[in-house]
Image (cartoon, rainbow, N blue to C red):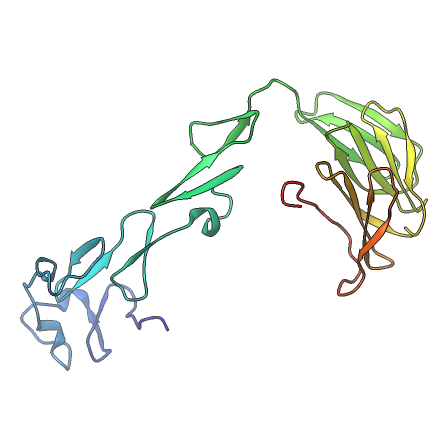
Length: 256
């Protein structure tokens, strides 16, 4: 239960009454229990018997309070301090990898990236231009992030609603819900083929695990999650209960 407080710059008397903070220790009793004039001009922080703060003691007009060093949080006893795990409690504190340390944290970058001056953001070390692959239902295209360069990869489809990329083999996997099929095609537009064509009436989301080499999808009409090998063999239904009209799926290759 949170400790009761008074609004704004007010002092809370021991009996719960609130008075202006400037009225504390002014030699005039404002609290009905007279707690605003008790312990005035006493520095409790100098007493090892009273001051049991783990990190810092801050003297106040009538008492004292404990504070913690940066990277730590005051515990429920209002005395002890615990380390804050910034990697868990501050989502997105690092752009890639986060390692908690005592009172702080360290951001790390994956191979092929270096840490920027802010010590949090990672940037690629190579000069490869990133491209965005997208669909407008009828064709696949790629475009540079600055929008200056673009090209058509493939066309002639009826309703592409989802795609993913196999970075290991430069393959795009995509699903056409009108044709009830999952396709693959190389990034250069060659080698298009059907990967999955059976028992996929309405695949609306697809995800590639390019490390474990598995293909996952969700079927909105059947309300299922399916998986197969990258070539479409060994199809299995992973989940068919507890979900309703799934529309998208994402797999974390490193965590499985």
